[in-house]
Amino acid sequence: MEKESNIEMLFSKSMEYAETRVNLFKLKAVDKSSHVTTSIIWRLVVAILCMSALLFLNIGISFWLGEVLGKTYFGFFIIGGFYLIVGLIVYLLRDKLIKIPLGDFIVKKLLNKVYGH
Image 1 (cartoon, rainbow, N blue to C red):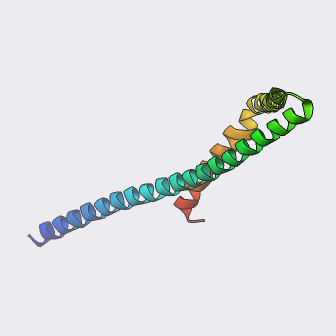
Image 2: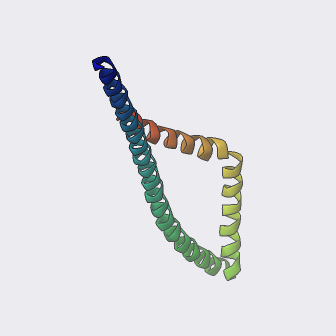
């Protein structure tokens, strides 16, 4: 009877341990995902603010160029053409400039939270 009691106790403790490990895994997953999410959101907020500033700067430059060239729309065409060229370059180099660095960033953030670096 004592042997059964020890086995039952061992089984009970094993089940508690397994449940605790599952809960710990869930908490770590939530922590990792929340850290990555907040980091990405923070970067998006900064990017939106920078893009807004860049937008108004470009509008000002477009009007200034248009005034210098005599026709307002010339300035907008020049700025539009400039961004068309930049967009084409970014598109052609998208793996090197965006996909790989972004993937590396996400993996690094996840691994840092897992291994505590």
